[in-house]
Length: 361
Ligand code: IPM
Ligand code: MG
Image (cartoon, rainbow, N blue to C red; front, top):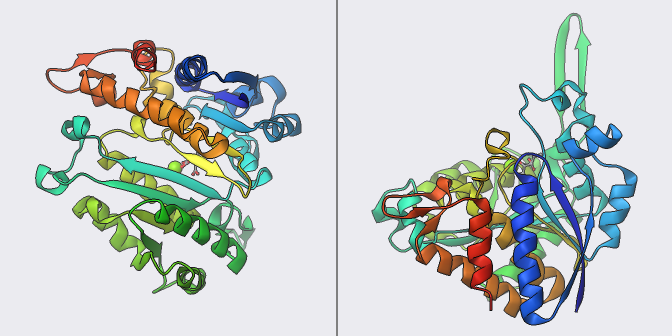
């Protein structure tokens, strides 16, 4: 089949890690008989440099015209980059928020899996990780504090800033349904995370999630307060299957979950709307400190490309071939510096891409 893929290389390590994911996609296409057709799209700092804003309407149209978008990372060093002298709505991150909203990418899937081979890189004690863990964080991505009204005002010489956290039941229902659908294909357990002991928006969240749960009698639902969830993630990560939560909580918990897997450089993500369209990106950032050095870990981006094949193109076999190849290369003992440990062989970004390609046959 012919795959029309929008590509946002972005900033920092973005271009390097996306290049490896494209290499892996091309190899997969060759082996399985698919044609990869790429359209380069500018976003973030790269777009600010070219057009003065982090995402143009034309870029949104290009993304919309693609079947799926593969993204690297956006943003630079907040202290030194000129992008951060601009007002907040013109900074690189605003491009990411704009594309999420414009394409209605309300469902953010962030799988956090502990690879047997990487147990050494996991900061948790061995007795905690013995049984391994494999969870899917389902983060609502187009509502809550990120998109609520905000303002900064001064009165009588006192500055006051305000952000608002709003959810309506439709927004909660659609992400909850996605969460339960995904749980059905996994271990059939949903942990809905909220702060219902304090927030009205969380109390509504809980009510609607319970209504949705009634339609999925085969799935076990539990509610967990977000502070407790932060603790449970380091105490007993193996208890989780699907974690369903709102935008801000999901932002925080997904970074925590990624670190307990050993490295944020391993974590893929998908942001989906109601159709088959999705934006696929590594969970990590643009890491400007190591950009251009050829040492960044491309695995999260490569696994994001695998998620793209699965969710946007129904190419499960091809996606599994990529996932297997990643597992093989790790078994062979090859590591980028972020996941390096004693007795392993350290390699760079490009070599990692090459080794993974070699196992796709
Ligand atoms: C993420 C990032 C973004 C977010 C930033 C870059 C706006 O941290 O994708 O998790 O907060 O959503
Ligand atoms: Mg984040």
